[in-house]
Amino acid sequence: MEGLIITAFKLDDDAVDKIEKKFSKHINAEVKLKQEVDRALLGGFIVHIRNHMYDYSIKRRLEDMNKYLLSD
Image (cartoon, rainbow, N blue to C red; front, top):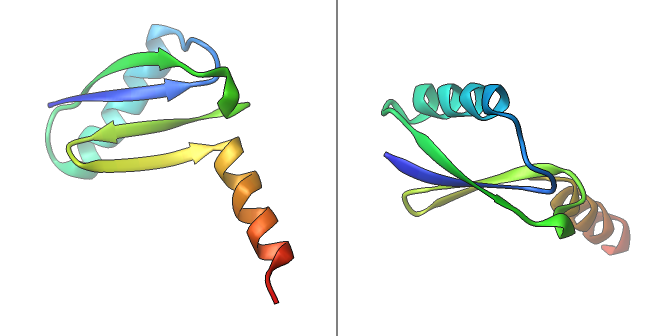
C-alpha cells in the first residue's frame, strides 16, 4: 500500500524504512511511503495512508497547545 510522508526536512532511507515498518504493523499491510518536504511543519511528520492522516508535526502540536491555552 502506498502512502505519503511529509516532513520538514528530507529523511534518510533508514528513517523512512523504520516509519514504514511501524505503519505496516499498525495497519496490518505493507506500506511504502513517498516523501515530500514542507518546511512549514517546523519538525515532526505527517503520514497519509488510504483516507487517514496521522499528524505528528510540531506545527500541529503548537496549534493544539494554542487552542488549549485560549479555551475557557
